[in-house]
Image 1 (cartoon, rainbow, N blue to C red):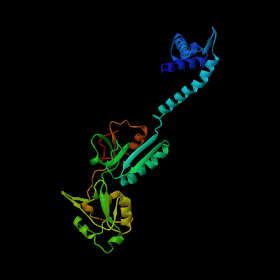
Image 2 (image 1 turned 135 degrees about the vertical axis):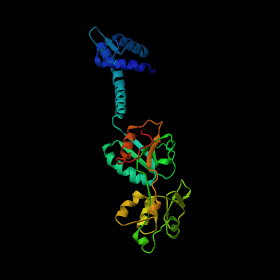
Image 3 (image 1 turned 90 degrees about the horizontal axis):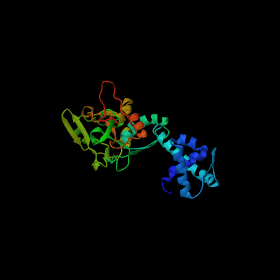
Image 4 (image 1 turned 135 degrees about the horizontal axis):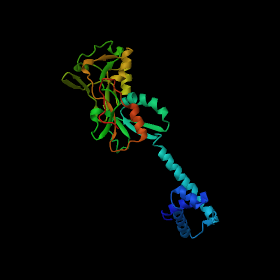
Length: 309
């Protein structure tokens, strides 16, 4: 049946359910004569009479009863689905896929989203921990997390952390028989825990800066990991010095479980941002996630995102 017949079917359903051309026409916002023409066209196409018309009433024939019973539920189902889709604008739902390295996934995304998601039971957040420079468009991620100076200019970038700082730390047991390094080159005398990242193709150098002087130090040690969680655990166990985001170490420093070194060589660097394509229509679910993890700078300090969604 041609698609034009769908309008004629809708006209038939309204007339059959209302039992009147006048009431059905008012319901549909058309004239009774237009409805009558649509019904005649449908009957001619099917070559069967669907309605019995009298001066006082309209009723369905046997063929009309059968058509009404079989077709009307399908249109009702379509109306229900359209209403449900429209409702999605009011009630955020769906899957939000994010790619991030271990630190922001654990210390920035999880703490905030774990508090807000119970309020949105129809939203699912899938976080992929990955150190690669993933192309979020080709890999079909909704958003990614990187340091602010690593994000392409054509992306919407929303700050989700303050500027970061590295901490060089070791346990009291590690320093029991060793002197703390006073300058980066002293690390050559220490057992350092290395991080291997796929984006660097090798071991991550330890970056230091003091004033205008910058250094990249290649350290050595007995342990190499490809994520920061095990590095923290190894440092706590006295296995060597760790080079970690400061936030990961603060609690352990406060408890005396870790001791800091080279603090004057560890300067702030760009904070983390959530980013996503500027050309992509933001879903309600993504909007909820963005607002939940957006960084709120203390009053009087900086920390604005490059662009707002």
